[in-house]
Amino acid sequence: MLDIALLPGEYAVCRLAAGTAVPGGLLNGADGVVSVTCTADELSVICPSDRVPADAVVETPWRCLQVIGPMDLALTGILASLAGPLAEARVNIVAFSTYDTDYLLVPTVRLSEALAALTAAGHRIAG
Image (cartoon, rainbow, N blue to C red; front, side):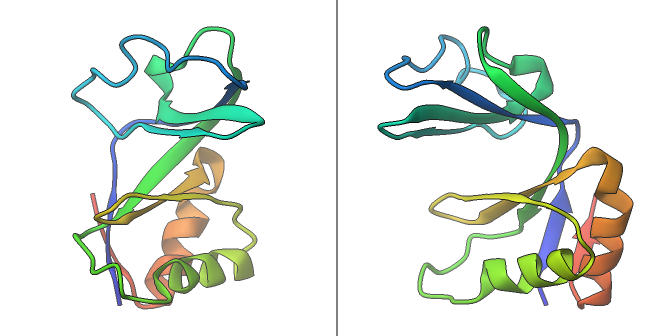
């Protein structure tokens, strides 16, 4: 059983061209979570919907669930315990992790189904 926080507001999943610099000011906001991943093929940004970078390809709206941590990096099966019930409920996800914890984005239109599936799997939702 995990404790999960439903973060306020809506989120966006964004794609920028490979080699694009991290947009100025993106990491300066105090509200919400921002994740930036750089690969040879793209710069991906997950951020609150009101901070979407200009010129990004954007998928929105999403809601963000945070596993309340910090969690030990040696733990196994955390994402599987969340992704499994959501897959059974046919709720698509975008997952990302930090040093301290894991996050899941679920489509805003599927939020009630996602919360029901996670609760039925024994997880506790706050927020």
